[in-house]
Image (cartoon, rainbow, N blue to C red; front, side, top):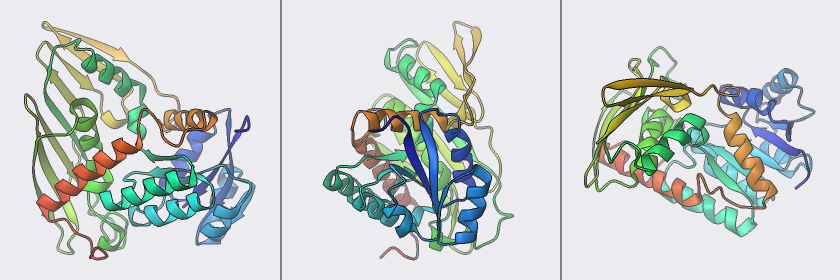
Length: 327
């Protein structure tokens, strides 16, 4: 892999703009191309971020020799097909979460990575957040005893958006669970593993979009209480309660810049400022893996994405969350 890794963006939307702003902070990476089905949108993105190669179709981008790795930032239901087409053209892929709509889709994507010997990672950027890495290490090392209770939520108000928006249009895999519920589910999985049992219930929009979901992940000696919603804001302070103390991830916890430690009646606050918005750290991980010629990350592996998709499938099944395009 050359010294500067050349990145391309698939789908120049809001999240791609956040990603591109952090990519500028990574010295060994450069944004060389952008592709969209709408050439005007791609050109606007290119003008904003000084991107030299602009394509009005995804296929042209996938075939471009100007790109080593592609960041797929389209709505969820396009992830699988676009990522597979990119990998079939020999491109490495960082794909926005959820990697696929279902475990079946994720399985197909992982197979394409192996068949084409290219890197694939789900953009679960919180996994690489320094605060979350530190808290996981503390839990794993048993610094506060045994983890017994976890509470994590993610919610904001989205009912003022159009019914054709990504969050409210069932044809675009709308709803809270896949978009933001994935974060609390991820945290429970990261710290406690796969649960023995899942309880879940949802409320729905008249058009069928899931709007609120509450979950309990039941473990042998622990429980995780999780929530995602589009009907109101929530505090988004994650509580990690152990037998000998407690850790609180600062709001908004999925992009935490520090944590509180409560032990023996004493409270200490630890600041861990972020570089950029937070995407910076997953970009470093992808670049590192590409330089080491890996097809998956050790920190967020193919198996991790498979497990996460299985948890999402289980929640959706229990809550009867189904999209019109699913047979």
